[in-house]
Structures are given as structure tokens and as C-alpha cells.
Image (cartoon, rainbow, N blue to C red):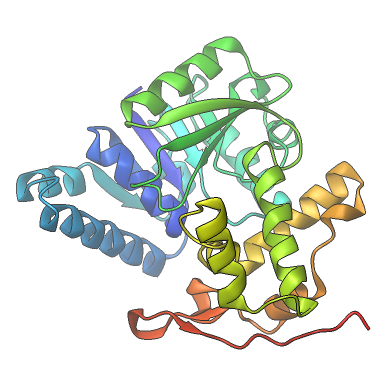
Length: 297
């Protein structure tokens, strides 16, 4: 597989396009928004500049990487030569079903269709296509150029050839693929999101403040960043969406999102992407935001 199409030029999409292009693959980056495509390419260029500054790549490497990426605003044009399509759109089931139905119609019949979903059923996504055996999950971690894990999720009908091909191509990216089965949240978010939610509930109940909660988890559990800071990086709206998938899919109220999380998302405080969450992210700095304190009493 040499021709890769990436659907969505946002944070995850441009990161996925970056790692494929940097490793010699021809990448079609697809987004209906021309502005998103320009921003995505700009982000890739800046991230490559950081690697040059750290002397991990050369200017020639940057030029080759960018030359491997072509942008498209129409799925039909962006996937017509694809060997592998990686969808990285918003974490919304109906949107993904619509996209995969279109990908199935527009992609070559032998193309593998992968989703970067962090929680939505691969089997459900595959049901929107006529090639469920070629549909699989490729859950990259953010930031994609740095994080080594790719959580590979087999759907109920994913065949061994598809699974083997995705494991192999993940290794060619310098990643470590790890297999998981198709259950809500898979492994990563089934474990991570309840921890983040519990941290938010602890803040909501007044057990400790934002900085204190994060420091305890960093210093006591050797986490590189605290759960509230991590939630800001992931996006509080994404955290909320994943928790709802877990709650609905597993039928267990232990996954019910914290009211504080719900209120922050409703108020537009989404973390890094909005400039404000549990922390302030303006001007490249991280200053404590005093989040609303709720009491169970």
C-alpha cells in the first residue's frame, strides 16, 4: 500500500497525514473546508520545523514530506486511487456512517477503510459499507507524530488479511500497533475516560483543586500530565462524547459524564481548541482557570 487518503484535516487528520508522508507514502488529505486544509498543511509545516530545530530531520526531509501531500475538497477525487483510507472526522456516529457509505462508493474495491474513532463501534461503521471485511479501526494517539501507539480494532467481520496489512503499515510508520476487539471505548478510552471523569467529579465535589489533582497523579502515579490537563488536550467535547458512547454501549451509569464536564462543554470551554478549559491556553501559556465548583450537598 502506497497511496493513503486521510479524511479530515483537523488535529488528528493532519497528524496522520504528516506521519504517512514523512515515511514516504503518497497522501491525499481530504476536507470539505479549504480553510481547514490550509491550516492543516500549515500545522504540518510547523511541526516539521520543530523536528528540524531538534536536528531529527533535515530541510530536504521537510521538502520531501510536504511534496508527498496533495489536498482535495471532494471525497470522490481524494480517494479514487487509495490503497488505504483513514477517516479522522469528528467523533459523531451518524457523520462517520455517512462518510463510510460515501467512501465505499468512491474508493477502489480493494481499498481498506479505516477509522480513527476513539470509541464508536467498528462493526457499526462497517455496516454502512458493502465491504465490512475491509473495515478496521486505526486509533492514533495525539499528538500523532510523537505518540507511538496505534490501537488497531477489528470489527466483527474484519478479515485477517485486512488486520495483518494494517498492523504491518503501522510498523512502517515507526508506530507500535496493539490489537483490541470491538467493544465500546476499546481499551484505551474504556480505561482512560473513567479516570478523567473521576478527576472532574473530584474537582466538582471540592476534594481538591485543578492543580492539586493533576500534581497528585503526576507525582504519585508517574503520569506525564495530570488527567485534567490531558482532558484539555483531548478536548472536553470529545471526552463527553466518548463517555456517552461508553454509557450507552455498556449500559452502566458508572460512565455517566460529570455534570461539571457537561456544563463546561455547553459553555464552550473545550480545552486547548477553545483556548479555555481547566486551564487557560492563550498566548502559548498555561495558567490556572478557576473552574466552577459544584457541591453534591
